[in-house]
Image: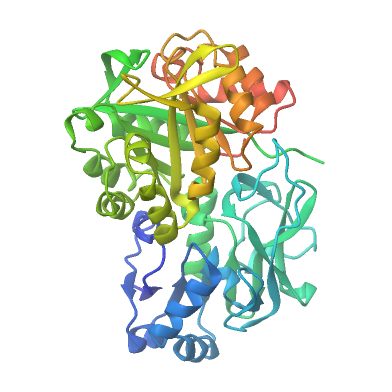
Length: 211
Length: 254
């Protein structure tokens, strides 16, 4: 049984991620213990809420360095929602805050012109597309087709500096944004795979298959 | 440019571990088992589930948490829980049970600071402010509490705007007049709130046939279904196909 760790840094609700993995027969450990993270076969960084709050908590529990060391081992790492955003260099949410800097780029507010049919936060189901024409078969999106729907809740999104780090995009009100990122063993999903039905569960299964 | 996908939310009102359905939020009748229904709707392709404890705010208790715990092991779409949530501790408990969002009505009116505090701690994305609305005149509605039993004197649109200021992430508005009647949503109410707040609005109460859904989807981006599903009037697939035929963008690859 692979050792899967969900980083517990006191932010967001991880019950549904745990439930999703348990449904797949995996029993992740929820922990902030550095050795457990370093020795895991796969690590998930969850998170909802404000970017700075997330980074502050990672710092408070002294987990930044641990995450960097883990990532260097080349074992799979997945950031979900805020966990994806924190992979990048910085975010413009409430002024500029520094991120983990694992993938080059920044996090900016979705430049959507809102109206009574187009609101922020972007809450709901949206299609994930393969606008960069990438072969998804070696990624967490293996076996999924462009046009698959996933559940989103966010106002900010990552803008990777390099196109090669864009795994998938989504379009909200005419604004195309990166909804899945990858760089070597690092993955990030802006949407919630644990809340995206069968297709979302498949992504989590794919992630485990990277072990 | 494609418009955002309309969200179809199955509303499951629960009383003493049974799914119930009333008319105007009263005269409750048992229609099934909440976990079984939630799982069925999930498999059939509903986009979200909303569990409401129908009596909690009357008797100051909440017995939904263990139902949520079980449902969340089978249902992998967003789940909202409401009814009788009074404190930050209740919210923590609801989220820990596996709910993604909590819905506040009575307590939001009695103690608006709760919305503010809750959104600061857990983020606006998990705070759904619920409004029970009764029409009091042309384009005018009043907010009610305790399942449409007690008036508050608050104008619904003004209250909705206040809820946004306090930090609500979404607004769920239930028309007490239409609830359970299967005669269609209060579209004017939906329109009035949707046009006056900048966060997503969910309309609830009155959906009884497919035509009602198209009208609602043209106004805002989310609606709740109860009778229509609980009484097997239409399947979720029929609902989605009907909306697609009418050029409404919905999630279909479930």
